[in-house]
Length: 154
Image 1 (cartoon, helix red, strand yellow):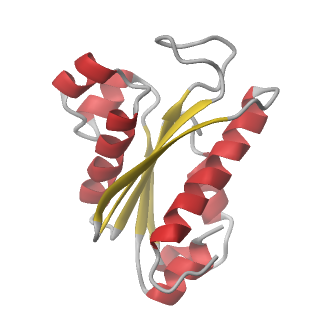
Image 2 (spheres, helix red, strand yellow; image 1 turned 60 degrees about the horizontal axis):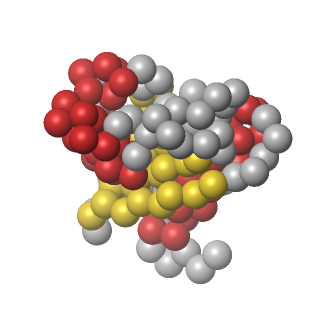
Image 3 (cartoon, helix red, strand yellow; image 1 turned 180 degrees about the vertical axis):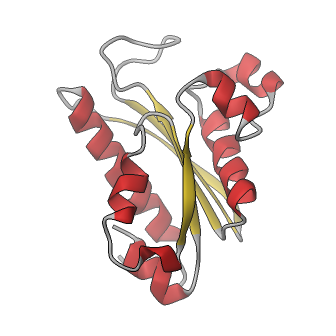
């Protein structure tokens, strides 16, 4: 995961989750002492929550939809701002069982907002079910975060 690396770097994290439905926060809070670096998270499953809680602009949602790289980036910025964290990490996508807005099951968009700006990733998993997709998405989210930490070499 990334809790030890965050703590070692003296950096903080907040999460905004849609596809993962709280899995990032759950995995992070299972680590003893994570309160030194994890500020909190928002499960913004509904589009309205993305807009009203995280501040994702309505025009962005109208133009690109809640399952988009643009939404993931805005969610990451919103949670970073909301919690005053060094990093904001966001997940949005389609865990199934049905496609959403033309995106197939297994679509994942990640956003990461940090001191160096905002980055993102768009990925796809052929995993066989919702839980497997959510677990894969959490692993990919932490992988993206790790690449942004100073001194991390993988």
